[in-house]
Length: 504
Image 1 (cartoon, one colour):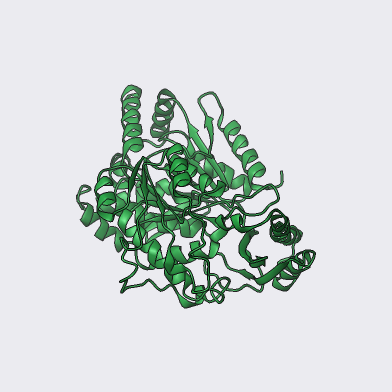
Image 2 (spheres, helix red, strand yellow):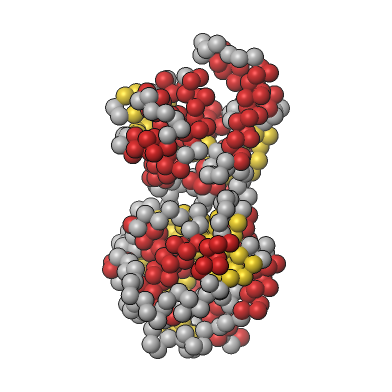
C-alpha cells in the first residue's frame, strides 16, 4: 500500500489502466468501514481510500476538534485489506482555508432530515466529495447506507455535474444490539450504548408493521415514537419518512420509503435509518455469450410475472443503428454522436419484447450475424455503455424486472436483490449457437469455428477495460452443461423466491 498526502503524488500514482474504486472516509475506521473497503476491494482492480476529517461539514458548535482520529490504526487496517493507495491530505493541501468555490446541493434535499439542525453541512460534504472525485477520477465510489441523506445528495450532485462515477451504497453494519457502527460510538459509555440500541429497535418495529400492509406516514412514525418512549434517556431530534432518492417527505409509501431519525444519547448525536420497500426484487442474470441467459430470463419472467428486459438486445440495437447509418464502428466519437440522438424503445408485444430504434421495429434485424459480429466492439465503447446504462436503470427503478447481460449484477444493478451467473463450456455454447443459427435459417460456420469465436469473445469480454465480464461476488453460479432448460429455470425461480421473499 502506498500512502500519499499530496494531490500531485496521488494523481501521478494513479496513471494507468484498470477499474478504479474510491472509498472516502473521515478515518476512525470501524467494522462498517471494513465491510465497505472489502466490497470495493473485490470489485475493483485498484482501490483508493481517503482519510480526511472535513472541517467544512462541521458547524461552529460541533465536535470537529474532538472527532476521533486514529491514523496509525487506520493505516494498518487498510494495508491488511489490500488497499492500493491511501490518501491522507491536509486541509491546506485541499485548499480549505482559501476555498472560493463550494458545491451547493439542491436546497430541498438539504432542508430535511439532518439539514435543519446542521446548516451548511451538506454543502461541506458535497464540496469535498466532489473534490475527491475530481482528484481520483474513480469509476466507482462507495458510501454507507447509514448516511442515506448524504448518499442521495452526492448522487444528485454527480448526476447534475455529469461526473462519470458510479455511486454505490453499502449496507449498514451493526453491533450485536443493533446499534449502527459509527465513529462517534466511541463517545458512548456502556450504559449509553445500551440506551442507543432503541434507535434500531424502533425502526424495525415500524418495518414490521410495514410488512403487514401499513403504508401511511402517520402510523409508521407513531410506531417509532412509541418505541423510543420506552427509553427516556434518548432525546429525539427528528423523525421523518422520505423518498430515498429525492428526499421528498412521503405521506404514503407507494414504492420505497426511507424511515430516518436522529437522536441524542447523553451528549452524542446519532443517526439511523431503514429502507421500507414494497417493490418486487430485481433479478440480474449475467454470463458469457451462448450460456442461455436470454432464454432463461424470458422463461423466468413469464413464470414470476416480471418485466423482461434483454440488455443484449439493446446493445444489438445500437450496433444495428451504427451499421445502418454506415458509421465506422471504430470511430467512437461518431458512434457517440449518433447514439446521443437515438430513440431506443423496448416494448412488450404479444410475442415478447420488441426493440424499436427511431420508430423502426428492429427486433429481427438485430439478430443478423453481421450485427452479432460487431456487437463486442460497440459494447466496449464508453459512450454506448453510458447511454444504455441510463435506459437500463430507468426500466429497473420500480423493481420487478429481470435483466440479462454481462455486467448487470456488477455494473447496472450492483444492488440487485438476486444475482445469477450462468455459464457453460465452450463446446456446449458452440453447439447451442450452431443449432440456433440453423433453426433461424442462417448459414452457420462449423462448430469448431464457433467454438474458437466464443473463446475469443470470452477473452475480449473478460479483459476489456470498461465493465469486463465478471461474476458478482454475491451471484450464484449455475453451470448449465448437463442441465435441461427447464432445470435451469427451476433453479433460478427457486432462488428468486428464496432471496427475494417471493411466495412459492
